[in-house]
Image (cartoon, rainbow, N blue to C red; front, side, top):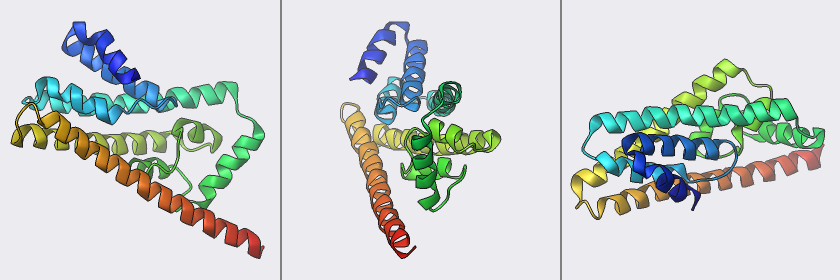
Length: 199
């Protein structure tokens, strides 16, 4: 897996290497190549599971790295552009959702309704200040939950079991958000189809 390869590449650098690895994994994920950053964040937290400073640092680093990844994709789309047909589909898709503006970036942390968010920021011409705010708030909330689950596991279970239990908990949360996203998209698709048939 790409995340494991990145961690192995920087492991010899110690704590700094782990931070660089986490940033790399999250930035790559934000630019459109899934790396499961939540999973690797749990493992990296385990390096110093008894340190509050380490936990806080990971939350902050992960949040700002997520912001960076999204803006890299945003910049790429702005510079290279995107076919008009795809832009039309993307705008039409957001119009069907419960919110169709920058607030989607926050909602997306709970249920991944919009993939490649940086591209949507560019195509939909969202306000960048609002994008920064919602991306950061959402990333801080999500990262805090992940670290809290990991901390709870390490604090209450044997050290050899803790990372696996934390990992399972994070995967359950991720799967639940995907299911919510799938159900919502399906309902939106049905409603959208009904509206088109009436028009």
